[in-house]
Image 1 (cartoon, one colour):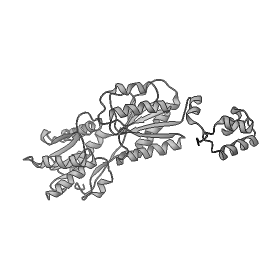
Image 2 (cartoon, rainbow, N blue to C red):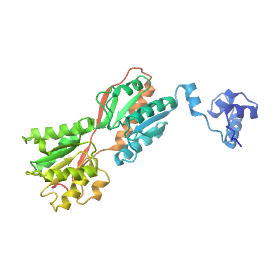
Image 3 (tube, rainbow, N blue to C red):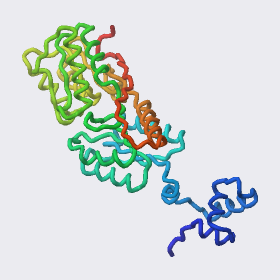
Image 4 (tube, rainbow, N blue to C red):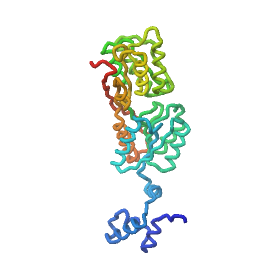
Length: 340
């Protein structure tokens, strides 16, 4: 038997009231008497009436729903951002639809279109690693409020929220210099990653400000900045005649791979080679020695993203806002480097 959908019309027919009266009663309109409101609400509860949020949104030109697109929901840092998004959205009376692109550019475009079709009021997105062509994203900016977070792009003219990648990386590398390290390697992503390039810029600035020369042999770029790549690239660095005395990686997972490989070859950490990661993930305190890393305040990024998106939604301004908002990351010093 097909389940009957309870509608406003059905409630109105049973109570012998107009549809508008039932609607206003459910929304506590002051023109509707308390007895009528109680009668309507009791029947709605008994019949398990659920408002059609999309129809309601169509009438009000607002659904109070935010769309969120992330590369993967399983990444620890992403989960902290999503937690902040959900908490702030709930506080402000908004619901959230979350979807994964799985780092697939085509799926990312499909998600954007689906979110618009669902009638969301605005979209928060963290881009895939492979996002090059912004032509598939630009139409969204002309359709509804759109904000990027974490994985962002300087090519897209919208509000973007990330941590202060360059400054945080500068502080991490300067810490290594301050503990006496002079030959500092970096494991980063290839040039198309905005976050990686910002962290690389911080690395280069720290070397320059402390008059340390740049050696291309210890600057390693990979497509996938993973634990396995951390292991492989450490093997490569150890094969160089003049080994590094410190390794800075732009993710904790790669740094864990570095530590595992150094321990495999009985290299003393941090005495012979110090290690710094980036993210302050759970891995950083599980690995031995505990990893010195940059703490990324994911919840703060998520909350700020929602705050700015709702401001754009409720301002009803048609002009596109373009600004970069940087949340401060903090260096957490642990046993993989000397404590100053």
